[in-house]
Image (cartoon, rainbow over all chains, first blue to last red; front, side):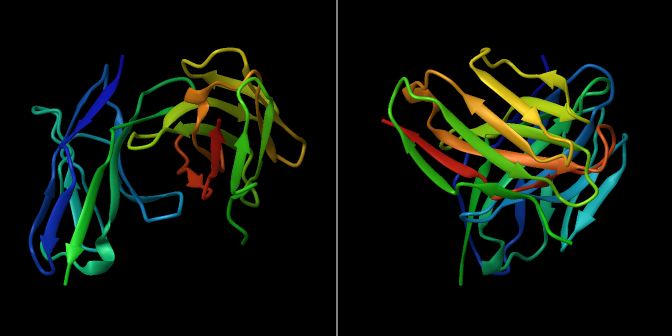
Length: 113
Length: 113
């Protein structure tokens, strides 16, 4: 079945550091890919998405590019802030049928001042 | 517009009991999905309802059941609770069942003792 693999956390960075969180996927066909963010005590919020190969999703300084050849969708940000501390989930939606999201296990990011 | 609201926020039940969790969809949304998020894991798809009909189900036993009402609010029922059912239960609504972004509630934290 479809699956998503994220880099293990936790990740701890200093403010203004560069962030990369790796994500790879296994799926039949061409799924849509997502990054969700979960702040403490809250539900998930969509951060960005890409629906086809070579698409780049971006939001709030975060970017991720849909790479079909490497089945990857790595999340990057050039300069993190303390307010970016959260858990980040990579996810995909299989084509066809119900819009069932398949999530990775999540990567906890802590940014220190 | 009001977002997705879930109740209760926290709940403690004893093994073998039954529980009902509630979700009020975002205004204008006709589709609701339920996810189970165990501690330290990514959310797992339980099922989706579209216009009061089940529209897809994940790998969960029949003791997990749901309802969607004419106003598109929803319930998740779990019978014969087990310790492993302890998790954060997330409800997400969307404008339609395909190609519409999911809007998540903050979840219900269920503890089974």
